[in-house]
Image (cartoon, rainbow, N blue to C red; front, top):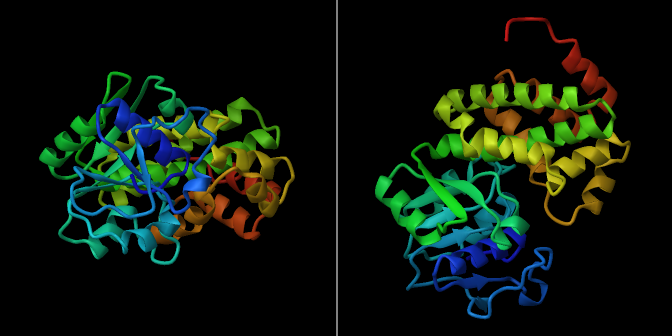
Length: 306
């Protein structure tokens, strides 16, 4: 397990629960995430050495904007599972595209779905997706990580799964802003629904499958992140909707807000595709639009069929 933030610790606990021997890599073991309210089992080995030989799988659980730097230091002798969501700001690359560039001979997959770290750590029921083009790899990884309370499904569309994980963070900022501004549940429901339509267009345009959008890595993750108070991206939007600056919203966060870096990268990667919600979020975060102007822009779009 490479990365000892809340999600890395939760997945380490889950892998141990599934009966695996787990080594957790931490840049600074003294600062291992304490937000889970669940202690790490004593059997989990904590190290500052990146994994070498002997692992069945390497779970890469670091923010996407730091993924390249960490992945470049790996000398993988086992499949890599990316457990982070977003798009690299400088290159517009999805996580698996970064790995394909750095380690082209290493099998790789994505773990994505509607999962809050503290609930996974506590063993509450949840489901997620292991996305990879190789069915044998999907089966292998599901066998390593699944347990009765953590149900894993295979998916052969890593592009769709990766885009779902990236876009939902951006749309969650918009959903939080709607609620923070007092626009109501109706407005949030409409925004989530139209956000799902945006995600569908994006996935289809970039080579994924439209049906992936309606699964756990799309609709499932979108619903959780746009409604759950534990979502950092949603809380960022709440703060913005309540009149706070982006700097204040980021400073108050207990962790990385992936949607802030992903929003402009996602819009740039879409190359002119019609993404009104994601575009409005990117403009809002960049200071090109006020929240009031963003709302007006979305509400005055031309009427058309759904």
